[in-house]
Length: 139
Length: 221
Image (cartoon, rainbow over all chains, first blue to last red):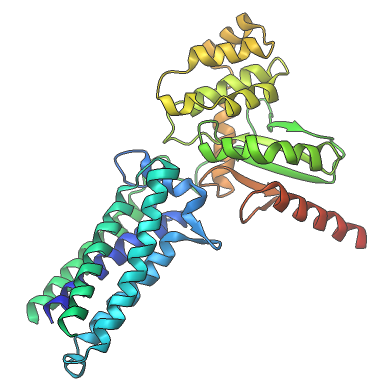
């Protein structure tokens, strides 16, 4: 139960990070508060969009899905079920793989790091570890 | 369980508060809908162009000389665009400066290109800045290197030096940047084809397909 709660809190935090980056792409936020120039370099690169949509929007959708599933998993009726853990692990694994790809792009192609993206990477990594631990525990 | 919901509320309030704060306290370089937006620089300059004035389609490129994607476009895609679309009279290409604040020497490079342009060598300097793009990775002041580029492409260096010292065309660059902001440009390179923002991967094939379809569409009318 604690793991699911932790996933919900982390997913909500991740959702806000992704939302911030998405609103920046929409022009709502002005300049990114980044500290280095890396955020704008990353956000201005062609890799900041995928299939015509900002990458951050996929992040918002992914974290929102994780948040909703984790809240559903916290309901008393779902407490003893394994299925919510599997769903969380699948979602977290997709997010983690996508984050690995994006971080590799920052490292090897763009040669710049966005602190917000790294923050999101840390969050999804923690979510992924917790989700996998949840599945293993219920196996 | 109560502690969990309290924590959730704290995260929600902190995240939401941060978003609201950021949206209401934008930094000064942000696009502003209320700022006066010059349609052109004080001298009426609207960017250097390539191609025939009679070309049916105009492509406007907002670009930054320090941006690696702009350099990739200029060196890989642009030669094909020049051959297939500009030399054939289908497209007139307009270059607009959009030096991103994150790039240390973009503005200097834009000035160098403008000063070369004063002596009708803009596109030569454009090509030199993009094809010899190592300067953008070293972090060293490229002033001397730009001067060497100017010399290599046949620019009168004394006039170039005077132009650079006085920052003669800084106003043009600022006007171009503000124009881009007013059109919603956020990153580089950004393209407008006959006034409409180009979406998708900017390859020579994509531009050719779009331009051909626009021209074919006009013929049908």
